[in-house]
Image (cartoon, rainbow, N blue to C red; front, top):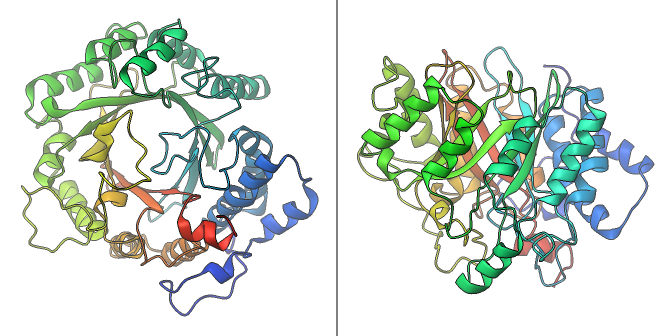
Amino acid sequence: MSQAATITMEQPSTIGVSTIAQKHQSTQAWRSLSRLLPSRDSDSDYWWGLTGRQLAFMVDAAGYSMERQYEALLFHYHWATPNMGPAPSPSGKLKWRSLITLEGGPIEYSWKWPTRTSEPDIRYSLEPINQYSGTAEDPLNQRPAGQMLHRLAAEMPEVDLSWTNHFLATLFDHDKSKYVEEAALTGVPTSSTFGMAAEFVAKGLGLKAYFVPRKIGHLPVPPLEHWVSSMKQLHQENPSRDVLLDFLASSQEGKLFNPLLVAVDCVAPAKSRLKWYFQTPSCSFSSVCEVMTLGGRRPNMSAQLAELRDLIHAVLSLPADFPDDADVPQAPQYNPDNNENDNFVALPGLLTGFIYYFDIPPGATLPEVKLYIPVWRYGRDDLSVARGTMNWMEARGRGEYSQRFLSMLGSMAEHRALDDGLGLQTYVSCVLKGKEPDITTYMGAELLHPLRRAASGAA
C-alpha cells in the first residue's frame, strides 16, 4: 500500500451506531485544502463541502499517496463542483434530477476492490448541470458535459473526443425543440442523456463519456437497430459486436434485454473501448450464468461462476440453499410505487432486474461481460452489503482494505447508521476475467436523505 489512511476520527464502538456527531471528520488532505482554497458561489461551496469531503474519505481510505489525493481533490474542486448545478432547495428539490443516482443527484462514486497484488481505484460518474439544463434551450442537458469535456481536451492532449462527437451526432435528433414538444404531449419528461466519468487511477486521470439515446417517437429509448446503425458507422465489421447481437437474437435471456446506454473512453479511437449497457428483468443465478457465458459462447467458466454465485449470496444475504433458478427477492423496505426517491420515470426498466454491460473493443472476438447487482433494491441494508463484500474478499486473500472501506462508508454516512437503511451503496459489479474477478462497489452521496438534511438544519 502506498500510504496509511489518515482519516481523523474517533472510531465508533460499532459501525451500526449513528454517526451524525462525526459530521466534521476530515482527512489531512481535506483539511489542508480547505484552509487554502477560496470560497466561491453558494452552489459550488455546497457541492465541495459534501462531495469533496466524501471523495477525500475515499482516496484516503484507498491508500492514495498525498500527491494523488491532492490531484483528485483539486480536479474535483476546479472542474466538477462548479458544474454540478444548483444545490438542493430548502425543501429538498433539485432543479435537474439526474439518472446517475436513485435520488437524482449528479454524482456516483465507485471503489474498485484490489486484487491480491493491487490497490483500490477510485472513480466517479458525473452529469454536469447548469442553469439551462432541462429548459427549452437545452432540454436534454447536453451542453454542460460537452463544454466541460472540450475544455478538458484543450488542457489534456491525450483526450480525444472523436467517438464522443460521433455518438452525439448519431444517437439524437438535432432539432431540440421537438423534444420539448414530445415531453408536453406524452407527459414523459426530458431526462439525462449525456454524462462523463473521471478515473483517478495510477497511470493518471482518465475520462469517459456516457450516452442515453433519445429519438423523437421512440420512448423510452430507440430500438436496437438505431444503436447498431450508429456503431456500424465506427466499425462496419466487429466480431465481438456480432457475437453479442447473435446472443440477443437467439438466447431466451438475450431476448429479454433492453438497451440502456453506451459509454466510450475519451481516447484515440484505436485505443477506446465501447461499453454497451442493458437491463433485464431476470435476476436469478441461472439467468446470470446464461448471460456471463453468452449462452455458452464463453466456455470453461464453471469455477468463475461459482465465485460469482458466492458473491451474489454474500452481498444480498441469501441463504446457501437459495434456488439458482429463482429471482432474488427485493428488499422488504423497497417499494417502487411509493418511494419518492425513485428517479427513473424516463427509464422504468431500471426498477427491475439486473444490469449488464458488454465491452466491445476493436479487434476482439468476444465481448467482456460485466454484471451490476442493484444492492439498493435487493440488499438487506448497507452494513450487510458491505460486510458481505468484505467477507468475500477476505476469504480470497483480498481483504487488506476491508476495514478501511467500512470506516470510509461510516464517514460518508455521517447522517445515519449503516444498518439503518439501504442506498448508500448502489451496485456491486463483477467482471469474470483471469484468476481474480474485478469487483467494484458503487456509492451515492445520499444528499437528500432526510436524516442528512435534518442534521444540516434543512427543512
